[in-house]
Amino acid sequence: MGAMRRMQQYDEESATIRWRECKNAMTLDGTAVERSERIIATQNYGVMRARIVQQQIEYKKKRDKEREEARIALEKEDQEKEAAKEEAEKKPGFDGTWYTDINAEDKEKRAKKQTEEAEEEFKKDKEFWDTKSVFSPEERLKAHKKLEEQKDRDRKREDAKNPPKPPRRLFADDGRPLNVNEPKINFKLPEDETENSYLLDYQCYKYLDTSMIDVDVQPNYIRITTKGKTFQLCLEQEVNADSSSCQRSLITGHLIVKMPKAKQIVKSSPKPAKTSNNNKENEDNETQTKTNRKNIEKLEVDESARKTVDIGNIVKEKGEVTVPPLGSKPLGKKREEKPLSENFVDNPDVPPLE
Image (cartoon, one colour):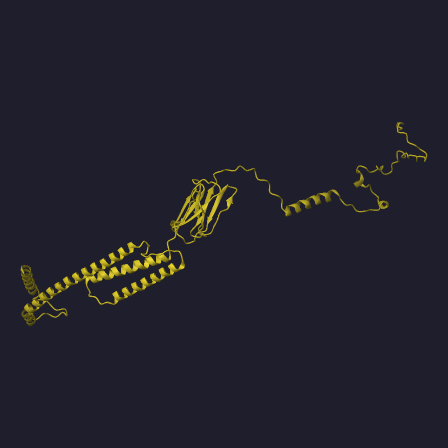
């Protein structure tokens, strides 16, 4: 009662202060408050104040009742959850039921029970949302909690339908690296024999930000992480990771990784390139031209019509008979050998005549 009296005294004092401050006040429409209106407000002040105090007391009782009802409903809900939990612990199944995966009949029973449970939960949710409730903080918290439960239930169902994939293995049990292509990006791995190195052409997207690509070169494998997805490629020969380099094409956006091999190969000097068919034809033409130059063709002239010295035949080729110059006499006749008789027998012991 003392607190109530103090509250009434405080309300009277505050109302008097507000009345004094509003002597020259104006209404919301911009018109000045007249004296008659102030008199009426002063006359009705006691009645209005008593009504407001009574409404405050009634609202306080109403809020206490709502809090008590919310507490009782929460305790009842907790008891039901505890009972359901104890019932599920008595049965070792992960969903609180006795069953085995021996035959298809058990699976059908389990699927039927899950369907019934889903229908029951749907009915309860519909009943909850269709029930009228007071607009109180407890009811708003209860509605928010109900939404969270529905989201968790739906999330569990989705996880049961689509179980999460196991983590991707990058290495075998013996430590050997495995080939992985999670982003499913095409690539090429040619070998540069001139520089004894691998040249990886990683055909990533053209407009992909370079900051989202991470390259890790190891002696026996290379790993490229693109937007959280791993690309790993095992190499047949070891490479020098420190000497490797990578750059991105400004035209295609492909990532080019150059990895020199750790084992150097000594090679002989390159052989001269073979002449092409065109060069061979040119050489044959040149050879034929030289041969034609040596074998000069001459015009045929009648020997009886010759009046001058044949300068072209001054020097004869070997094997031909020497012709004396014009006007000279022959030195002698060539001795002719006599034919052998029919009864001639050659004796090999007799030396030849000189």
